[in-house]
Image 1 (cartoon, rainbow, N blue to C red):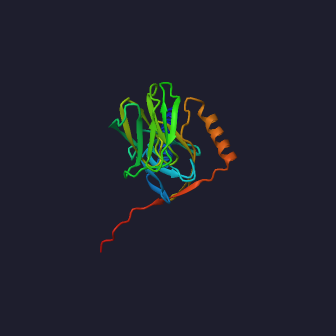
Image 2 (image 1 turned 135 degrees about the vertical axis):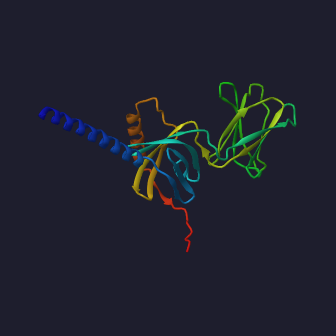
Length: 247
């Protein structure tokens, strides 16, 4: 009887231990999953279960903003975002009939169709090397004449979503540049701190993390680099949806 009683108690304690382990694991998972929208001025982080959409500025340049979306995981003091194709506004282009046989005209406009000045336009060969380059003037245009080896055209500038597309001889091109630098199909890493239930603190450490290497060592390198640059964190406050009182 004593042996049976001992075995029953042992079995009971094992069940309690298993239940406790499951309980604390659930608590840990819940703690690592955020929901809702956090804002800092015009910047925002929107969490929905294991998915985040972000717009952040001040890390890539003084006036540039970076946007993206994807699944995320929180590892120690880092938030690692595996970005998908961005579903928001992106740059696009349109083929136009060529105005001259020996010339390609690239015109750059904003999403609202206004000419954009100061955009770098490059013609590239099949190896990706630049053949020629120009910067758009007040009319938003750049002209290329050396097009025999050209296979692609790229348009880029800080604060805009860069674009690159195939070149076809005999065409001109109209490029519509969207605001913001789009991060997609890459892994972004943020230093992350949940200060309280309503406040998050983040620093963008990289928008192109190499996940093939040893993760912990690479994260430590990013941390040291951020400290050398003396990067300042950005604080986001949770927004609560207004509700109506019914009397």
